[in-house]
Image (cartoon, rainbow, N blue to C red; front, top):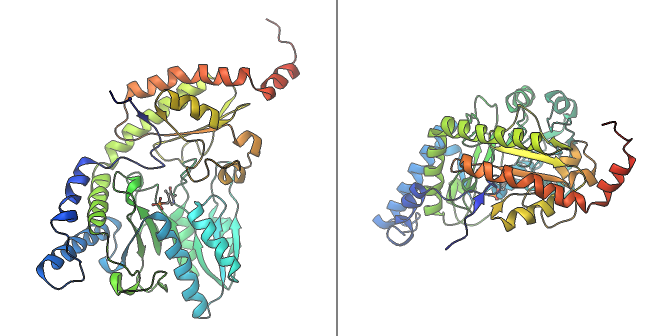
Length: 400
Ligand SMILES: *Cc1c(COP(=O)(O)O)cnc(C)c1O
C-alpha cells in the first residue's frame, strides 16, 4: 500500500487538478500539430493557444496581445527584468533598477546578473513583517530609474505587498513596474489595472496546473527585448515552439483557481489559523514569521527557538508529512533565508523556521495529525540542543 502523504508544501508546487490534466491530454498525441503550421492540425493547436490567451487576458483585465507564454515563473521574471532593462538602456533611458530584499531568487539573481552587466540596483529593505513601504520605493527612485520590481506576495512568509500603491508611484514617474504574482493567483485580486502594474509573472504549477508553463503580462507600450531569440512566436517576444498542452493546462488551472478563489481561500485560511493557534498554544518559544494579517491565506511560517528547521523536516518526513524550512530553492544550502534575515531575524534563529503551506485538498484531520505530532518532535530536538541547555541554565529560578 502506498504511504499516506500529508502534503503541506503548496508554496513549492501543487498537484495537477484532474480537470486540468483532462483538458491537456488531447494535445499530446491527438492534436499534436505545430501551431505555426498552416494545415488544419496545426491550426487546431493555434486555436487552443488563442483560447488560452483570451482566457488569461480576461482574468487579468488585459488584452490578449499583452500575454506572453513562458516556461514558468523564473523565465517570466527574467524576461521582465532583463527584457525591460536592456530595452531601456538601448533607448538611453538609464540603467538603475529598484527591487526589494525579499524577492524570489528569479528576480534577485536576475538583477545581480544585470549589475555585472553595468546596471545599478537599489535593494529596498523591508520591515520586520517583511513589508516594503511605498515611501521607501519612492525614496529609491532616481531620474535614471528604468524599472521597479516588487513581488505581490512572498513565497516564504506569505507577506502581501502594497502593490497598487507602489504601482501608482511608478506610474507618476512613467517607470515600468513589474510584480512577481506567482504566489497570488487563486488567493488575491489579480486585475492588472487595479494593481497598477505594467508587467506581471505567474506560473501554473503553483495553482494546480502543470510544471514548466507560465506567463508574463506586459502592458502595451512597455519597452522590452526578447531574451530567447529564434522563430517569431509570441509576437516575436519569446521564440520557440509553444508548449501547447501546458498552455491549455495553465489557462484551465487559472480559470478554476479564480472560480474557486473565495471558497478555497476561506478553507485555507481556516486551516492556516488552526495551525498557527495550535502550534502557539502547545509549543513554547515560537513566533509567527511574516505579517499577522497582510498574509497569504495558506501560509504558516513559524520560528522555533533553539532548533534547526531542517531537523523538524526530517522528523515530519518520517511521518509522511511534506513541509519546508524556507524556500525550496534554498533548502540544501546552509545559508539562512535571505527573506528572514532581511526581516531582521538573526541567521542562527532564522534556521529554526518551518513553513507549512496548505491547499484546497487538505483536511482538518491532516492538520490535527500535524498538531498532535509537532510538540513532541520539537521537545525531542530541544532536549539535545546545546543552545536550549544554555538558555535554561541562564534562566533565574522560578518560584513554584
Ligand atoms: C515558485 C516561484 C517562482 C518560480 O517559478 P517556477 O515556475 O518554479 O520557475 C518565482 N517566484 C515566486 C514568488 C515563486 O514562488
